[in-house]
Image (cartoon, rainbow, N blue to C red; front, top):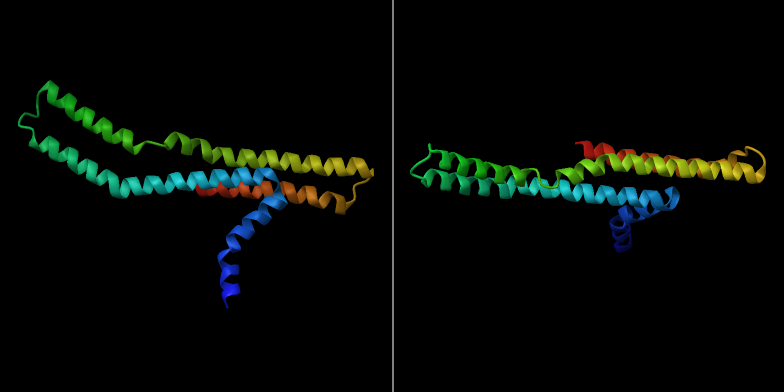
Length: 156
């Protein structure tokens, strides 16, 4: 029973290492992009659900405690408060916007390297043998698959 439990716990690790072994080094970089992407997504979820409501309430309380709210100075203070909240809400978005299109581009590089592997094996053997082409095509398709999978999950 304990061996079965250990096997189930390590299944994701084994699956990822098999994917990296079958797809080449680009799959590792795509996987790393996915980990960073989802770490940022979870951080943003935590920020919007826990931190932002407290900050907004604190700033709203500060605004409500002001006696004078209609002068030019008061409007600029209000604008600065809103700007501070907006800056917190949009933090890490540029990095997220880079990681989503980066994954399929890394998959494309892996696809090209896999196809070059196919052409090299064809050139060495002098014929288009299906067995010699299979590993290169598999390498190419695994890179494409992982790049698109990470990118699609990042779109949401």
